[in-house]
Image (cartoon, rainbow, N blue to C red; front, side, top):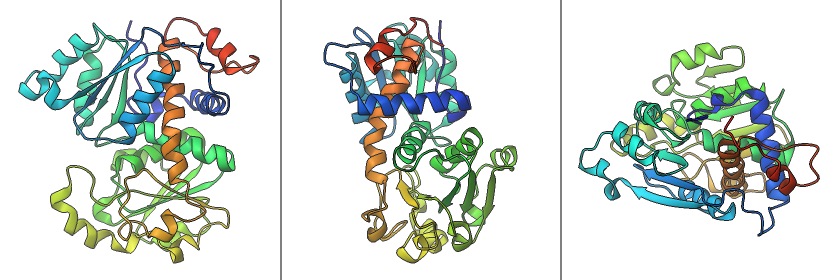
Length: 323
């Protein structure tokens, strides 16, 4: 039985997302005792077709802390590098491990892999979506300011970013307003925008979109694979740099988030990224806690039981089948 994949944020329902975030917060505040190993004898295979720091370390550490094992597979370490199809790799790996994380250039490639897998597949990043980053971002805002429901998020920069497109899905699931400030050449997927038109607006004026927002978010201007376009994208996006003047337009208690790595002086100035209202570093740490909750949900079939006295009791009460 394959169970559930996590390929984009709306693979969770709104209720499931709320429960997962609550569970992650409890795991962070009340870590499992060393004797509790809910993922003992479970193995995560991690395939990296794109390089990583936060994704690799957070997943590997999460499996270790939960009692399981993680295997790192770079493209050059597998037969993918010699032409084996993505589907054949999925068939073989999913016969040997319990769950797979794939970080890849193409979302279509991710879908092909998941369709051939016998075990849950997690999107560690694709060109279209970055759902694990959204789990960390939503968890961080929840931890520091409470729910995003009814609030306003401003995205400033590349609207076609996989993180921005994941925020579009989050707006629908979490019921907040998302304002995207981006050049016409960098707008998100039009079908995605149309499907979430109630909660998402897109324009070219960064000051208008930032004004009064509760959260400002950005990403690098040239993602992995776009290096040849870096100079052109810098010209397009330089008006969208998050500097102190732009951040000052946001709500007085607004936070700043960035998925990292960041280029100070390009998409964000150092005084914002390293300032007192930057939560980028908290979000980086929260990748670990959010992904621990995700792994337990996908492999144990349950998140937190509000009636349980502890996280350990809740995990111990988990059902054995995937949701």
